[in-house]
Image 1 (cartoon, rainbow, N blue to C red):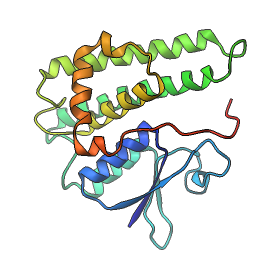
Image 2 (cartoon, rainbow, N blue to C red):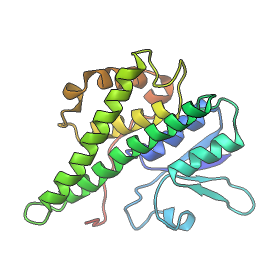
Image 3 (cartoon, helix red, strand yellow):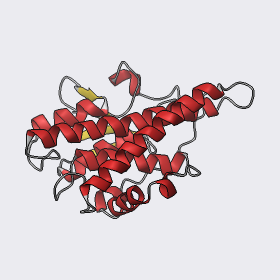
Image 4 (cartoon, one colour):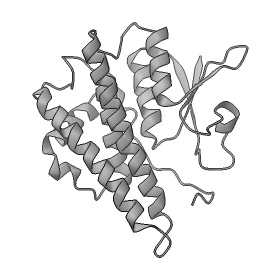
Length: 216
């Protein structure tokens, strides 16, 4: 039985949770706050980031970073593949993942900058990160519109592209509830709401955690 070290709000960890369930690979969930000094994350990932997949073998092998964990899962367990069958589809799915994760990266940086409080935060830095996030959301909205409203971004089944976008939008809805993306990109919101009805998305909805240690 594998162990997935996860944080409840993390879109990166949610991607892996959804992928493991969709691939029917059993695992137990170990929930941590990666920012707190009590986290076990540095014992398994030198970059101190989640998610981390512990294989629980004799050598204590750990697989980390969500991009690589997804690559590892596809290489090791190609059954119930989360990538399209054709090369162009595979490349497009990974391009979408890069965009979705990039939106999250920018918003995470902006989120923690906002925590600095008035007079300490850099408004220019905040504006830059939000501009990157908004650009990524526009691109994702365009991809959804080009997909034609069939339910998925590529073909007629769930792929890595859908998992990445759904996870990013779930985190955005949780941490930036006042963001206007739903009104600016109604088709993207409709697509997101359809994904959230899928059992693997419904059972992995993000929730906030309390960070006890000083982060910024």
